[in-house]
Length: 354
Length: 52
Image: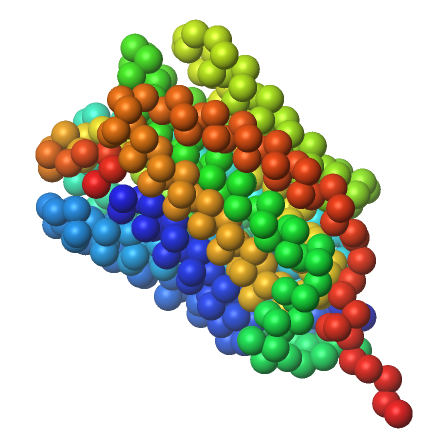
């Protein structure tokens, strides 16, 4: 439940983190986020009950992630390059996140095995504090673009929600969160249940990260050349196929790694395309806030994926129902993305003077 | 129309911004994605179910 709450807290905090970064600058927001994130990790060590973990691992860490992770870093990246290169630069940020996943998964497992989970959390908090000086390079904030309306939070949100393509994008992004969070949190335990060692789980997470580097860069590159909505539909459809094949055949070490590689290629490759569409619709001025709203939907999906995985396992002794739901949602999300149009929203442009 | 940057005197060279941002993204996401590895040891130590 704590991990599910963490995903939800991340989603709720992301639009506000984005809005703050748009207004006050990314560096300040990320410094605050890193401190909150580190505090949350340290407090997890002294949280012996579910309720306390919901607060520390859930809310505090979730808010810390929202204000310090790649979604906020992408705001700084987005305002530094022209529109035609944004998809690619978002792909670079996403690939870097995946490199972290690839490096930290086996490292984390080794630390847990050798020092215990409590010490591992404290080391992780220290590492977060060490990267704070790097935020200096990300200082600056997004200025209003020429010809673009200056809107308040609710005004911008209301106009954005009136734009059909944005609504479809936000709805489809829910499924991305569902897949990622369920696989990330429950797959290691699922593989152990299938008779594999915990190390296979950690290496499977690492393989996802490794292949996601390729997937993110590729989607960023393709997103600047092909219709982003069709690439997104293809990604969600391919995820449904990958999950279907994984659950159809007996789970072995080889099939776990093949599935991890396939999911890795499709993992965060949705992010550069989704963020690219949001900036195309509304411009970089509102990217932090409106991508944050889309990301809230993603995190709502993450919450459901993590919570439902635990709920279904505790009540049926199996994850099968959630895997099947993942297939259905993948197909539904692919269908939702097809009608999206790559055009900017007229309601975000200044009307000519009368 | 979309040229949106910090004032030039405050701007960081693009490559520095990208490298710094990528390291921050890698560390924050790397730690977050390792939480799944904590599920088994934490639930065992604290006597919790996976739903809790």
